Length: 177
Length: 177
DNA sequence: GTTCAAGTAGAGCGATCGTTTTACAAGAGG
DNA sequence: CCTCTTGTAAAACGATCGCTCTACTTGAAC
Image 1 (cartoon, rainbow over the protein chains, first blue to last red):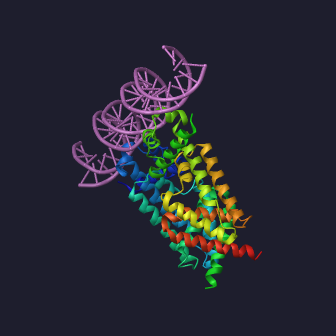
Image 2: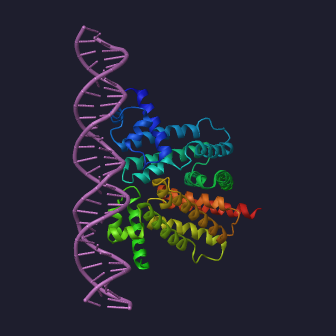
Image 3: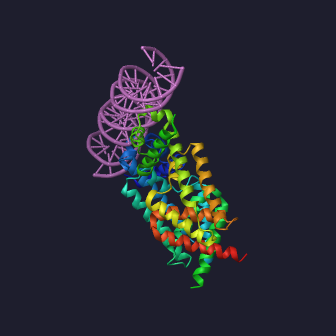
């Protein structure tokens, strides 16, 4: 059970789910994407659901790091930076929509998957609120972030501009309290 | 090819997809939900993908009617009413998330499905903008509506309050122009 | 040198899937 | 009376699925 093998597998799994969604790729496609034998794949992830879960945990770590590491110290700049990073992520890594929602939709009766989705969204909103000095507005931030993620696939960078405008509105409204 | 049979089928199909998602129900489950024989089902909808498409077209008509018919004449009230109707729809009809995004995620290579998704979202945003006197802010409205739909499953009615606040911000910002 | 964990390649299992087909029933029109 | 349409019930098809299992290789440790 080497750690390097595990991360190699999970990286390949994530790529496969990003490219093909959760409905299409059979376990043999996943095996090919992971670059190992079927036996080894099942040793590390003993079911297809475990493969999905492993891929999403890996993605969560990558996403949080890319979105929230090294943000500008100024709260206003930090908020715009988060929005830009979300759009950049969509552009390069998630042009088919949020992988976590997609996974829950594909396997609706997995409690573990649902819990991971909630943890993922909660952590992103909480840490964005902290960086943007918007504690107490987590619900509004979640809404903007979810809206940006979903509507980026529809409207592209126009969605990014809309998110920035709404973020500015939120900061202004908060300042008037 | 009677029309009443077709609407009976499509109503059952929509219910099945709402309850069970798009991955789980096999064609025989869909047949049971539609309340007809397999032969009849295939006569009206000659493939599983056609069944999905039919169910979504039916849902689109119902959604647009429920969201946009008989709105208050005052633009400000109309906007809040749309948000409340979205939340009400989620509460009673879509507690597992937007069916259109779910369908595209489940069948990612169906061009017809993708086109239907875009038509659906575009029509809702455009008509909401018209009712709320926010023409030119369709991207912001799409973002809020998508965000409300997605984050309602995470935060419930707190998402509704957030949408109303952001909507008010948008109206105020527009008024200052 | 032997042992043992960790890997590959690939055949095979039972179940389920979407779809087609066969056999039959009921009501309407000429 | 016969035929056509519209429907039901259910068997059967080939394909594919998730998963297990057998047989073999490799590299490092003791």
